[in-house]
Length: 399
Image 1 (cartoon, rainbow, N blue to C red):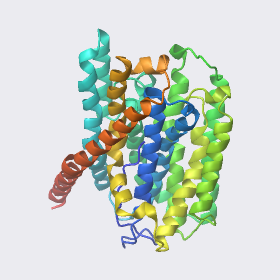
Image 2: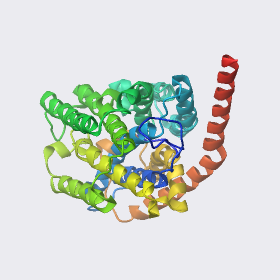
Image 3: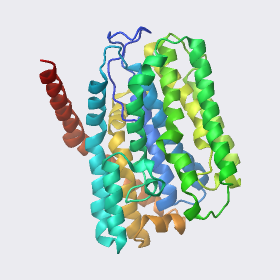
């Protein structure tokens, strides 16, 4: 998520970046839940594997790419020229940090009692890096700790830091310029992957002690920035009045086709591990087309099941779902397989069984219920409280 943490706000439609409000893009909120569920399935394939599903479920990890693209799109869609940098940073902090603290401390509290030796110190250190939004900058921290999903929030924080300056460069550009920018970003994404393949040739059983570079090149904020910027550029084009000729069905069909090709190539060495895979490179432009098509559908006033109240509610809960689903899955899987560490599940895969389907469903129900509760009584109130305090301080500074 990444996760994309952007809420529905009142955006300006005009290319002049005015402060006039326009229609809310509710369907994009519903899409967030589908992406979060895809990430959930990718972790089911590791912790509670089902027979003959791994090659399909692992594709769900591309949901993180979707979140990065969506984050860039929504931020630029809601951008106004009069918005001050400090106010923007304050809103972003209020949005992501309260829930991130829970996402870091809850799994730490659950796993710390079983930690042995220096492992406890390691867990605490990584939890601190998560809370400080630094995790994705150190290769050995990225996939360590008690929850492997929190790295994407460090990426989002970096994107947020750059956004106020990037938005000004894109908002009044021509559609032609934005199209070339999008193509360039996609080429950069592929260039990163090809370079990594040359520096770290794909192999079925790599030596993880030598993989710091490829891990950083796969998960770091710098490596994933192009996905976020692709969303920023797409939003700028839509604000300029551009509409893709692809409708929602056609854009979705292209996405499914891309995923199907990846599934056909599931036996290739470069698809054996996520650090080698081209999921992001294939899906980022396809996700951008889907987001643009869904946004255009909302702008045209056409009703979508993605914008219904249940889907919007699930979308609102999806940030908490993203941060907590792995913890719930891991705690259940640890009881089922009597394992103690996350690394054991990755290094020694659990046996696939249809009996795990019931446990996975239980994890889904528990996580969704927890997230609904947390959103209502902690996440949303904490965000409002922080926004009010930050706004009050800003008013005092200007008086």
